[in-house]
Length: 158
Image (tube, rainbow, N blue to C red; front, side):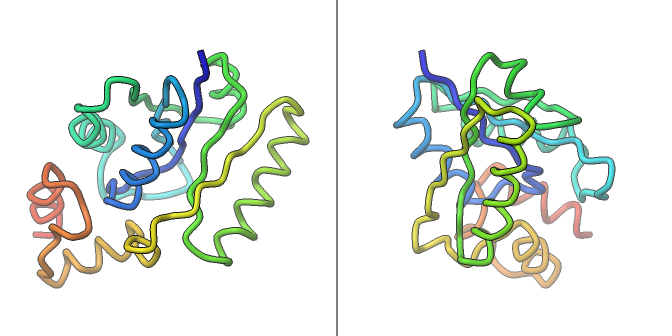
């Protein structure tokens, strides 16, 4: 059975993230969404809230699960008995950073590969940061985040 890890902070999960998740789920037998507890960042949503929002957002995908992790991604990948990391690319600027991370991960764990999926054109501009900014100024969020996230995001911005 092929398993892949799709890591991120998902603060909050966007429709762009869901695009990558759904496409990954069509490629791999099982996709584990790894929600990073990054102590260097101060997220808007707690780790538990981010995990729960993702679980709601992917509830119809039978071969997708959601788990939190902290520490090195390659350690989480090994813990899940796989060797594939999925990363979404929106633009050329993403590629530089993602390639550096993929190469660094290969230096630490030579059997771990990164699969890059190009974000669908309709989401190529979308990021969690942009979504939070839109929410802050009362923009309708239905084109940017799953339905289950909208009210939670609006509540956080109050």
